[in-house]
Amino acid sequence: MHSEVVASRSADQRDSTRESRNGNSPQLDAVSLAIIQQLQEDGRRPYAAIGKAVGLSEAAVRQRVQKLLDQGVMQIVAVTDPLTVGFRRQAMVGINVEGDVESIADALTGMSEVEYVVMTAGSFDILAEIVCEDDDHLLDVINKRIRSLPGVRSTESFVYLKLKKQTYMWGTR
Amino acid sequence: MHSEVVASRSADQRDSTRESRNGNSPQLDAVSLAIIQQLQEDGRRPYAAIGKAVGLSEAAVRQRVQKLLDQGVMQIVAVTDPLTVGFRRQAMVGINVEGDVESIADALTGMSEVEYVVMTAGSFDILAEIVCEDDDHLLDVINKRIRSLPGVRSTESFVYLKLKKQTYMWGTR
DNA sequence: CGTCGGTTTGCGGATTTCGCAGAAGTGCTT
DNA sequence: AAGCACTTCTGCGAAATCCGCAAACCGACG
Image 1 (cartoon, protein in one colour):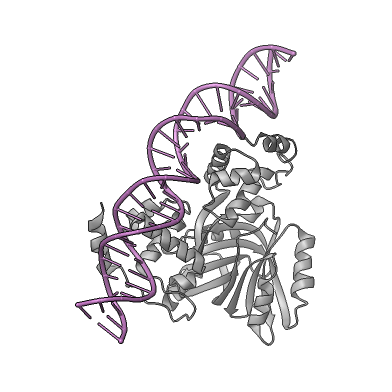
Image 2 (image 1 turned 135 degrees about the vertical axis):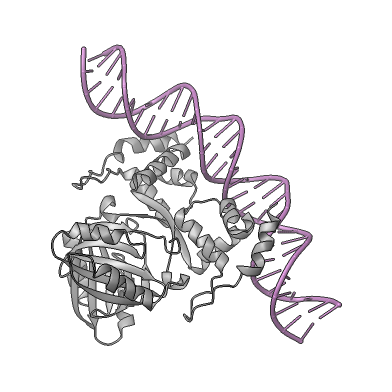
């Protein structure tokens, strides 16, 4: 059917991307990257359409997507502005830690109200995004649960007023 | 078929959630919220399965999902850890503004390297997440493009070292 | 009471997903 | 070079899903 596409692809695209120095990250070739890109535009795009776009059979796309999902490289989900969906209070919290930063980060990861945790360089060791239903809940999470973690030296909160942009399009520039 | 489910639902769930004080946000009833919740667990879950879970026919779920998509209330996309996908440098940038904060936020929104923009209360007026390929690119975006915006008083950068958590499960506690 | 707009439902037909067996490609060993 | 283990890709047929549409339903309003 589209055999000429397959033939023209296999030689060049296959291993053009080098696996990163990041130890745990599974190496992604250009085809998987292209598949991810397709699914970043529309998470429900049919496998056949993706296959046509990247030069692979429907079944091959399906297998690759399943593997990417299993490996945790990507997830296909609905995303919303939490404000729209009834979570009225959100905040980014900058945290300074003494001792092991990663163990604190892991503790934050375990909290259901914490949506996003990243270790950073700069005047904060950790940034964590908190999503709550109301002020009381937010106050409780920040003051009781986070500040009380042993090793947390200080925190600074930035309450969200308005979400202006939220994209998932990297690679599609 | 599942008429008893429909019957039991229509009376109670329909308009149990109040529309928010947020002017532009389309009011979401409990059923749409439940649909979103299903799609946050798996963006490719079949409409029929969602219908069974929320007590609606397959066609009704399909129409609601389409409307939520059209209205921009939610989007169904693949999300990844950018580090895994070859974007080696990311940073959160805190920005202080003199004058109109929103116009600066809009300017940031227009930059393709900016993934996330939120207006905040606290010692920053805006938080923006930047995704770049390398150090040069990141430096360029922060120093040349952001700091040069008229009205930007100061910026502070937090370069990402390691992403620890990234979830889209609000509502599913 | 009638009707008007918005939603839901129940279909058939087109499309997509799924599982599987065989072919093809890769790397390693002899 | 040939053999072998392993992974990936392809090409189906069957099952499930998606999609469009017309009719039914429902609350609101005159």
